[in-house]
Image (cartoon, rainbow, N blue to C red; front, side, top):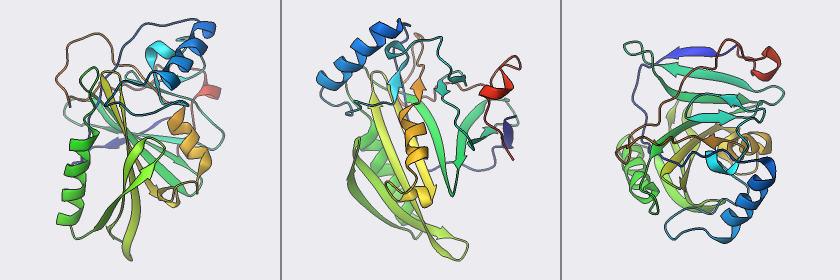
Length: 226
């Protein structure tokens, strides 16, 4: 089952967007090669994902959360943060082993990213709360590594931003997963994510709508939650 959590606080920052045509599995391979070779200026390198909806087969085995689709793996727990007033899903938290990952997707311009601006807002927020923060090179370009006040002192976190075609995907790695490479399985879950932007007009920075999976989803396809 999917655990639903009440939205009781604001997150540090976010943004998103994407294209939507489904393709065959053979065509998906061609599109992935194009992602490797023809990354527009201003967008993130992502030769191994995360993917745009137009780059994968819509009928694959990913679990459908509306604006995001994810692959279930053994031991993965999923928590959905739901706004009590609107019933909308705002954040999905993925827990695997000794680390967790919060993911959100947002609309963005077609060929320019918004991670630079979002990153500055995140860093300002962290320092304003008494945390320590630095920028570092990562798989998708510049990422934010920080230590924030928590139980027992400063706790490590890591923000990763991916500027895709008309979308932005933000990942917040917490716990052991805050150290790059320490939780390879959870990092692979992030790479396997598919962003479904849809064709509606959206303001850059507007959250892409997330929903809970349909009750008809196969239990074996849905990660278990505590």
